[in-house]
Length: 175
Image: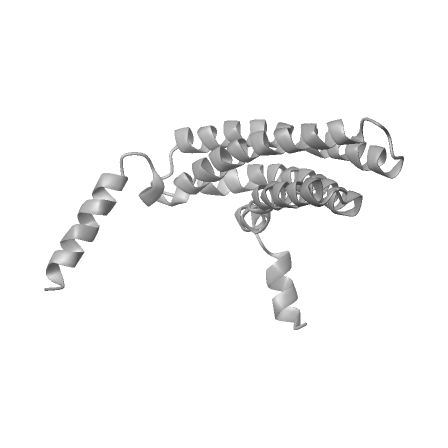
């Protein structure tokens, strides 16, 4: 690696770091749900254990996103067009999502242990984990959307009509 590249990586600000990690807490539970359903269908303990590990990694990714969020907020507050209200909505959604991700990670640790120890309640923990993970995905979507709305005005509520009107006028000019 070049020294200049290393220095750029080190000199990343809080917003950069947040952007690097903020999609992982959303992706891990989505992949985990697919894997745990596959494990339930195939009745494979190894596949279920893989799902538990994915959920645990998702909890750590949520911790990283929450840790870098404050630095991103300090930078975003100084950018024209970004409101405190947008940041607060995202922060509140992220806090709920993170807590649920941590809970999902904790239950996944229990599920992993129960699977390795071949406990009778292992399947109950697996089903509970799946149900919680599906709930976590709802909050993941909310957090991702509110985060995206901070800089992507085109996805904010009320802007879809303007976007559609812009598309129609562009198409009209193609003739």
